[in-house]
Image (cartoon, rainbow, N blue to C red; front, side, top):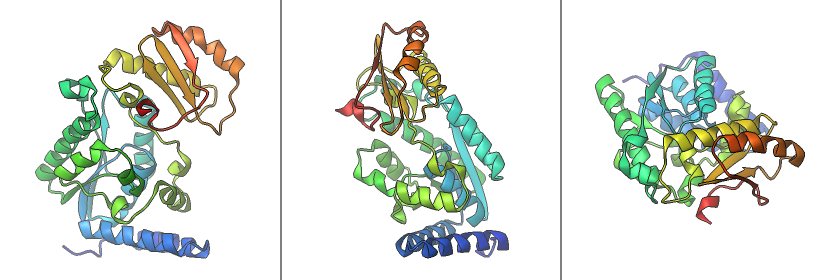
Length: 287
């Protein structure tokens, strides 16, 4: 297959991005970015697992411009925040991605609902199997995900699912960290460059607490209420009768305004509403 399918405007855009990185005295990142583009071009075509987050948005944007054939797929599942789904759809429209939303219900897998240490593996394995089915049926070369270089240093059961399903992770291959991805996204003019990190709603549940759709919706509604106060980094951790609120450490907390939300959050089915004074941090349920 020929690899000269890029439009001149796209070539100029990517070249200018590399030059901007060099002008900002970041030759190491410019080298990583060029390597990323070369890796993607070698794949030639692919089905991109596109959540609408920082990493997958950059990946989808580049694949759309570097591939001869691209399909960006977003899973609409019970653990997907409605706001994240809307963001993915809007990003796809704004950047003319070949985009498809599919229904995926991980709650149909009893192993996932059980919520043990392999929960993420069960979810990703099921999703990657579906994406590989699309790849085979519609003639794409690979399934591609947005895992980044930071992920290899963390406990990520989903990485094993990617391995056994032969999923490509070009951001890892190019050794791009989350910080790198934000810098590149900003230069490319992607408004996702400063988007808060977001995980699926099942990450709000302590291990071995069964995941139920009704509880997922309670958590999502509680987080939505808090975000309406202007907070960006928000997690409401599920502890049965207790809703434990984590807010980003760089954000100013107006306790008086938060207290006004307590009756509304209790109406969702919680008996107690607590504010975690340590603030938002990833993996707090593993502490």
